[in-house]
Image (cartoon, rainbow, N blue to C red; front, side):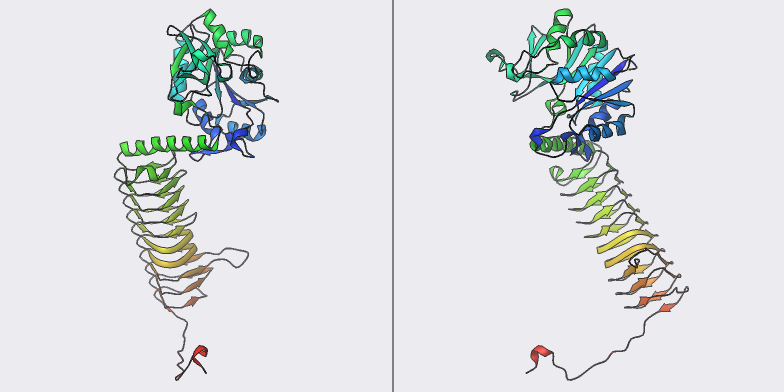
Length: 457
């Protein structure tokens, strides 16, 4: 579509959001609203993208640039209606664009396929304007599509709606494609003779209908309506989540309660994996085949390989878990962990920047940070890698088949060789060669008889 340019209307003040941030900078499904719109637009490969901004213009345009790359910004200044916004937007449209797609920046669920269907129908016709309509169960607030026979001849805004048109369910989505010659010729002729005193872009539908046949395509209301309130955002989240979960189920993923999970659309999940309730999967998370994720687990930007079990209420961030490993319950993997195959990470184990080779076990109640642990090593309860001196971080290295007794501390930097046994309650302050026993000798003293202070008279 080399002849296509896009104008994104992104100048609203987001008054109904009751927020200090533009609604376009709020997120739906982990991505900003304007980012989602721009992703759909970028898939069309337009010759140029023009963002018409006003409120928090630089912040909004920054997000547009992150996706489209070739975008230009036009500052609308004081918004004076959609017609005025498009008039300003024409200033940034590429010279070779023959058709101009116009859409709002607040429709996070819009799909590129829906836009492409509109564009294709427009290009196959001789129409000067084509637009997307939607059927609304509750049409109040939307511009109604007025047809003569089956042909659209006008869009009447809610503020100007006549009584005889109040029951019309077909509404305007605010997504249009114009032939450039028509838009340039008639846009400046718009006036503010309406209830809001604004320049309505919709008035061009009536003008186009007098010249040629206006074309329409349709889309679900949930996909093309804008988000203006907190309730709208919650609705959009629910719609998107339903699509995501349904797609995963269609691909062979099981859910205990499909309505009680939260999953970003960037997450992949393999066949025969099973997700319990209250699970959260975010970012670029990849879940393999036959993975079981227990209730309340949170996984962000992580790779969970095949046949892994994530037990309830575990948190995993920016880490990798190898095949046939078990994590949790109540484990926390902070960013930077690489857990090998057949590992066991138990309850209340916290890890950060740890590399575990095959078969390592850390059953419970330990902190492991900045460490490399060789295969088949065992980490006893209450073990701590003391990696921080108040200024710098240091690394602990354990060889293969190292046994670390409970309540031990490893003072980094320290290296422990293969097959070494660290006795219970040991503080390891120096390197230990392979096949060593490391202990801190202690003596036990018994005082008998003895009474604690609260029993003394």
